[in-house]
Length: 339
Image (spheres, rainbow, N blue to C red):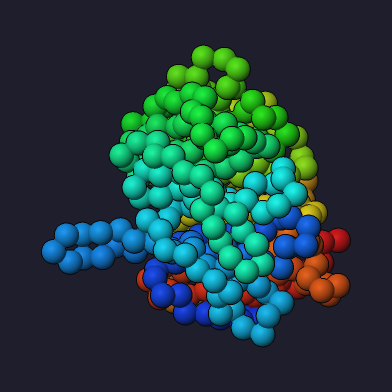
């Protein structure tokens, strides 16, 4: 984080902002054809009344509209994570909820409609990911669940408990449907081959000092994995050699979410909690700070890239981000070239 601060900030420019009705914690752009201008924001809020209650909401937004005011919204249980399926021709979104429900939503340009749901447990569901018609879910008890989402029954294929504390994150390998990763508050980053006995899987590196909060496999480079932790580090791994990371940088705050830029794969976006949002360039498996967005005034939680590469033909990427307690949703541009 030693690069010139003004230069890093100047590369990121606010486009639009919106005040969400509930605390905001996740953002996901649609990857499907004509819907790539649309993104969904998920909300998680704890209501402290006579009986504490977790409530949530999904809202649909379009970056091409004059404002970020939602096109529509739908109430739900508190939402911890959302993901779009990439293998279908129509937008289907998954949410994982505080009530233990995994839910699928049909998303159009006008509405978000629940089409299937399954209560997986009585714990809080913390994260989810897709590979084709298979979904993985992690829970607050440290469990992982694999689901077949090809039918409305959402059949459970397998479940196991590899972690001793909250499994904050679960993610598929982008090239191999049989490889799965998870990270937990037990400070362990683990890898599994779902064709084998699952158990504890393979530990990547040594057990750390703080929880693993984010994982994403590179969209194009085989065996390249990014992970983030409450210890404020972002690490790159060659998953063929699990002894130690091949790169490590400091994000200046807990690295709650990591997202590779999906069109070219040359930048990594990090939500760094108390330290805003940062973009790292990735060349020769080395990370260098390329831009910083510090316009949120609360915990930087949710973020995602516009899926079409440069936005509107300009030499700029588009990012949506949200922060927790200030209930803020922003879109902003990042201007460094991919070259």
